[in-house]
Length: 159
Ligand code: ADP
Image (tube, rainbow, N blue to C red):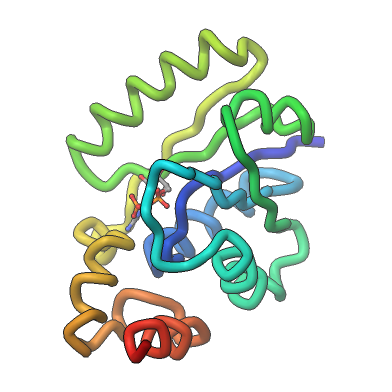
């Protein structure tokens, strides 16, 4: 049974993330989508909120689970028995940083393989940061995030 992990900040989850999740779920028996708890990163949503958004958006996907973790991806992957890390690649900048992470993960978790999925052309310029930059000024984020979580983003910026 092949279990993979797709980790990220998901602050918030975008249509680009969702596309990678749908495609990766077809490649593995189980896909764990894991929210990384990064105390050094200032986030819009709490880890619990981000998990809730992912659960809402992914509830119909039978082989997809949502989790969160602190610390090293290689450690968490081995704890849950995931042998592959899935990463999305939007451009050369992603490639450079993801390749470095891959090399580090190879050293840290020898059992773990990394699979890179190229972003759909519709999503190559989409990031959680872009979503926040548009949402803070009340711009249209319909083409950026799943409809279900749009109200949570709007609500956050009302406060
Ligand atoms: P971001 O870079 O938007 O803050 P994350 O840290 O949550 O996103 O990224 C988790 C993974 O998803 C990374 O492998 C990243 O390259 C990938 N990813 C992010 N946005 C997209 C997108 N629009 N299309 C495909 N993959 C993406």
